[in-house]
Length: 410
Image 1 (cartoon, one colour):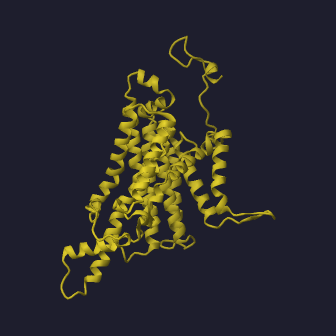
Image 2 (tube, one colour):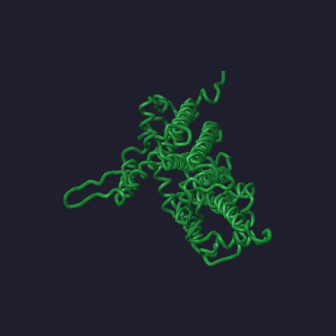
């Protein structure tokens, strides 16, 4: 009798249950709905961490399961933030302009309101006109479509060009990093239409919800982030546990053999690369309203390198490993760089963790790579008694001349 999905993947139920308990616990400890034990800023930090876990999940699919080390997925993450940020900033500014013009002798015309919005948003970069990229900024449905469409089309175009040319390995990683750097440099320019170095700000002020406190909004976004992570994890687990996931792992392990068997390797790569870019963008669209601001620095290549480090420390090729790695490193980074970690006085030198955190992170990555390649997820597997199946020297192929298990491990 064929087992059901959850029977074959009990870790999925465990993850969903732990996520639900975490969300409920934070809600009961928040200012808005509980004991006020957790500050609003920390609730926002936890909500943002869940978004980072979602983009780490996408990175694990494309790298841990597909074998594509993308150093550009945080660019898609930031693009999702920019798309939703345009609506947040436009609609909020429009409310302010309408209120300011309400006391005018004559009712303001739609053109006067539009001109006032453009001046308010782009006056900081010396502009007074609304760029073409802001054409749909006043429409929430349109911007939600762009959250998916813009990163998705960019990933589709980039992936089609790269994969059809059969660029692989470190060369593909360099290309993704170059794409990220080029996009960041473009957005730094004032004529990019996205306010250059200033970026988009005030995103924590949700239009139409001016009467709702930040205490409540922080919890609402926590719920939305938890729901997105739960849905993303469930879908990812379903994909990797089926035939599609088997083909992904086969491409990762031996791309040429999979191509020889008749599979469209480039098609699989393009699909996974594009879908994970969209997932990263959705995570960014939830992250930046909680952060309150986004600028081109968020697209810096170093951000995507950090993402790879999170997945490696958590244990790539394990969905829960990616989530654990992102949460662990993100919260630890907040503690060290937020001034909460006590300095260490060595007499001749005082270690300030704000300055030493990146070195500590880099050292952790090197140590994990050398001594614990399976990451934190591997430790969980060990504690749970999970082992790879032992074939006791049986053939790894369908005939007597196939590679033997002993040979494969030598």
